[in-house]
Amino acid sequence: MKALETRKTVSLVSVFKLKEEIRRRKIIPVGVAFALLTFILTNYGMAWADESWRDVNTYGAVGDGVTMNTRAIQSAINTCPAGGVVWLHNGTFLSGTIMLHDNMTLCIDSTAVLLGSGLTNDYSWLNANASNTQQPLCDTALIYAQNCTNVTINGGGTVNGNGRTNFPPDYAGLRPIAILTSLCTNVLIQNINVVDSAQWTVVNLEADYLTISNVTINDDGLLPNRDGFDVIDCWHVVIENCTIDSGDDSICLKSGSPRGVQDFIARNCTITKSGANGLKLGTASSGTFSNILFQDCTIMNTHSAAMNVESVDGATITDVTFENINFSGCQNAIFMILGTRDPGVEPGTINGVQFRNITGSDLIDNRGCPISGDRTNGVTYYLQNILFDNVNIAFAGYLLDVPAPPPEYAGQYPENIMWGDLPAYGYYIRHAFNVTFTNCSTSVVGPDARPWLAATDDVASLKVIPPPPALNVVPNAGALVLQWDGSFLLQSATNLNGIYTSVAGATSPYTNNLPNSRERFFRLIQ
Image 1 (tube, rainbow, N blue to C red):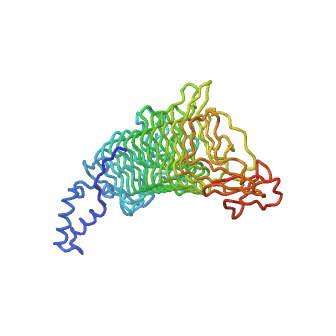
Image 2 (image 1 turned 90 degrees about the vertical axis):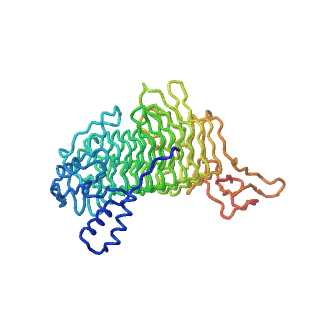
Image 3 (image 1 turned 30 degrees about the vertical axis):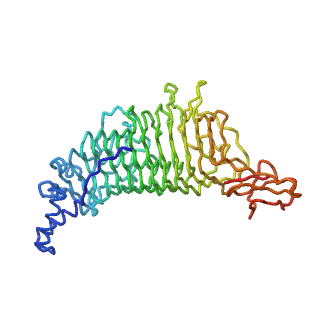
């Protein structure tokens, strides 16, 4: 993956406070102050000096949570010089849309809250002119930057979108996004808390060289459309060390133009709760998604799947890796769909998706993971080169019948629940080529009639390494004696389709001492 440019940062608030202490000649001796100032000047330049700082209070802002401060904050921004800082501190500042410009930092101190107005009329109507299908959903925002270079938002404080106010529920575009950048380059969002967004929370539309670090999102059950991070047709993106509680998809890559999403990393992030999916590509999927990595993330308590890959608007999806992912309490594990929502758009491709070192437990739904290509108008569009390596998932189970295969995708909004229960408790795969499982284990918490894997007859080059275990009868043993290789669990049932239950303490070789042995059926599970 292309290395991203990193920038040296410092707590601007700390520098400012140090400057104030020196000015007042309190606490810090002159010699120590001089040494500290020399260090700061050497390493960070003059960004802290008076002429580069704009304290919003000096422009008439009042942090009482009641006074409308849009005009005062915007005045501070408009007069902020290149390399300067606009500083909010010691209060709750009610505001409508504020618009950032090139080469500036918006510093929201840990003592400050930027509180979005609860009135739609206090927000500007935005038009990024991005020729992007997602633009109509990005028409209002609390913090906004357009066509800007070198924009930073930081400071340790809080952005409160006031999303519990009764904004119009029928059209998401009328509800303000908390933080939105459009058509920007070199964007840094770090050390900020964002709560109660009225719509998508942190959105970047067609941005290049975007870094989001140490951001906490908490929408605390607000529904719907409260995505955590939306990355729309951006290139060269890092999201790291973030914690997300979102009312909709938590980290979502979208494409509403041919530009697509390229060179993306999300790492060391924790999703504590999601009203939809955890890590997702799609649903908007027009352009190419390539060189995508989700790494070292924890996902908990998702209403839908932990991991999603969707191409339903013609997108090419290639070189995608989910690595070192641990999830629990999710509705499902993995959902992958190739198809088209528009009969006039030919399905795209999904080629080269890897799941490595994945651990999952405590799933709350038993339907199984849909992994599906598409067959439409007599043409089959295949998933290609899908790898599951060291994927270990405990599925819910408790389905006592094997369902019929689901119908083909028909253009509905794609969710893993759309086909109901699947013919496998683990993975249902169809219309795919070169699917490999290596060193994977699957298990079910409760008895289940279905196999761990079911694949249609057009799934070519399906490999399970090592192969499924062989359960053999020891010849001439007198009684029924079973033997097998590897650490597998023996289960039994009184009919072929289950209910199967584990045989306590069974190890190979195993002599059957169960009652009704003439009616016993046995199987091995991982």
